[in-house]
Image: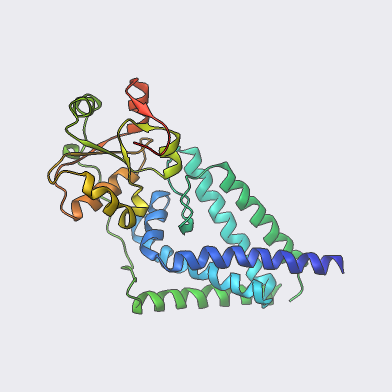
Length: 136
Length: 154
């Protein structure tokens, strides 16, 4: 019972975060492409395709989590995304890049820092928990 | 587990397809490939010495391309904050403060900071001719003991 309630709130929270993050980027693909470029991780040929596709994966996985559809699969995607974000932010911090996160579009403009990594760790842990414990 | 991986792949490819489709029909759509990023051309860079000269005579306007929080924490005295990513909203507020052909000096922070470069491109695209970048600007300016301010006022 306790696990079920925990799962319910965790999937709502995780879903809402993904939904918000995805929706804000979907409306401004050009801005998100700039953000992706600032991380200096990808060859320029791939930047726009990633910027076009990734927000939709966030958005759809977020909607599924909130609605309780295919929860474990959506949580698995959320885990993959958080891992990618952690790598992106980690390498940017390590190289001393002074860039905007771009995590929630450009609405909440803030320079990347350890707090973003901490949020990502929380997202990753939540996702992994749901992959292991949620029922579909 | 196999079923979960199947569902994951369906979501992955389904949402990718939606994304590509929406991008194709949306007025906000972007090209599928991005042109290589132009390097900062040597003639677009201004030395610290020249920037100091332009600052002391008041000839140039300094624009801080960083996020507002960074600007408030400290900026070149007199510099205006124009975060690259809010260009469309904030430029109209700054434009009246610029002379028609007044030189502009842009800076951000860090040797690998792209913000200045992006801002320079945007300013050139709307017809500003005299746009220079002070590389690693905030750090070199502060190190040189030049005038700085904190807070939201220039």
